[in-house]
Length: 294
Image 1 (cartoon, rainbow, N blue to C red):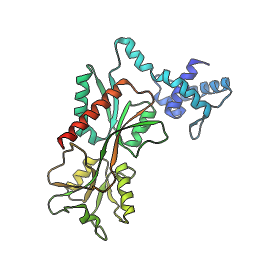
Image 2: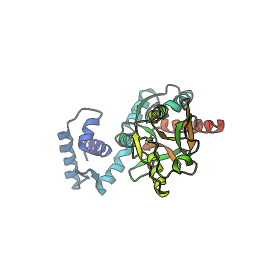
Image 3: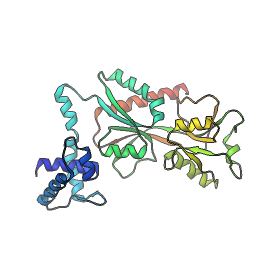
Image 4: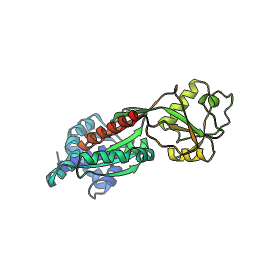
């Protein structure tokens, strides 16, 4: 087998398609050239390695990817080591609320343990994070999730967070029952977009209780949910996050008998050692916040 053909196959399998691989290759190569060389590889093996539309590895493709992935995925790490030391970089993606409330403490802790640690950061929700992990754009995602799926993404639970309603302190309800016990709830509901784990868990529990209360406003971040509640647009569905600082004038109504939402560290494939260092620090910081009762 041609080693270059195997490298191209690795990137196509990692990126879930030829066109995606062409955009994300570490060097310039056109899509037709990739397709032609993959076809040569398949012809030499006399096997189809993946279905084109929709993309899916065949059994033979899965076997070959499992063989080549450990080698090609570790090339950046070994290159850094040969240049003069272990790779101490990390590519992270997480929601804005994590960047605000947790990430500064986490980064400070990792830097204290690992001299020369540096990182890149972008904002993302669960679907974006999973796609970026599979395509190799990031090393680590931090997000709420419904849990492990059959997509190869590894989940490490860091925290369970209760759901809560956020209302204005002045003149607002004092318990969730004052809202949920109404025959017809007039108060507008402000949430993250539908499909977010917190929103799904809340709506599923309402359905079990035969309560109808659907989002009026679906906003891009929990910060925006807080802001719109502050401005008097309704009640917000939020996560009761340890250490979170709420704006003045708001009251948190814990939904104590609702399902908790799980917060995970997400990785894919062979993860760099820095991911484990980061996750150890994350668990330490979260444990510290719990002890303080924040």
